[in-house]
Amino acid sequence: MKIYDFNERLKDSILIADGAMGSMLHEAVGFERCFDELNSTEPEAVFRIHQAYIEAGAQIIETNTFGANRFKLAPLGLAEEVQRFNSRGVKIAREARESAAREVLIAGSIGPLGLGVQSRHPSPEEIQEIFHEQALALEERGVDFFILETFSYIEELLLAIDAIRSFSGLPIVAQLTYAEEGTTYGDVRPSDAAAQLKNKNVQVIGANCTLGPQALLPILEELAAVDGLRVSGMPNAGFPKREGDRIVYPRSSPEYFALFAREAAALGVRILGGCCGTTPAHIRAMAEAVKLLRPSKTHPAWKSIRPRASRSIASSSRSTRSWPRRKWMPSTSTAEPWPASAWTR
Image (cartoon, rainbow, N blue to C red):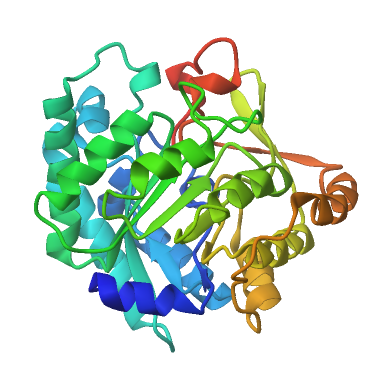
């Protein structure tokens, strides 16, 4: 997809993306050492999840390739499978799109290298090479655009963007993940991140993971206040907590996500989806909530939004459910980084 066409699509529209992949795969096939590997070993399971999100109203589905880079695959003895896992991830997504009754865009999912939980830190040049290899594999197989998501280090995100722009003219959605304090690693606020990303030829700048809908709204508001910025938001099902070696997410109701979607649309957010713990039910609720809306071109005061969101949080977080992590939780959210056993995808 050309950047111009992508920008035109977002000009007066809100696009709904899919939700969590890892937690859905965990339910379907059980715990696996590497969810990206399932593109080869359990393609039907991945296909069914894509299909479920499309049926729920998703206009964007992400490839199951979040961790399919050489750096993350190497400790599993899978470093030489980068091309195969990414290629098959796109192939499955394309097959799901072909079975749909309407147009669906395919986003090539690229996650961070997990530098905060790895003992070895590669050089900037090596980081770029790693991202270049994965992105090239995704583009060769036919993604419509790239989504760089759940990055905690803005320096790493900038390297990933440079790696893609060294060969690709496809659109890029760039998303950082933020702690409850409203900052990512290095105390970088959303407006500061936007200032660094705005001139990097990315088409959408957003936030995903770590936070639930209510906590993500002020992050999105700060991003939306930056002139000329197209914003995306993909919250978790709630703010996670650690219980033993498990990460537990509140079971936020689909109705709560519908409320979030309307509030985000009022801020001018262009792409909405879900992250850890979300399901097709959450995506269906958001799709229904915004199907007749257009993104606002104004930035309402946060105080006019927060009370409504606050009232619904009590009823939507009474119960919890244990989910595997879809994406890495940044070390800024606790005193110590999460151990490698605490995250999968």
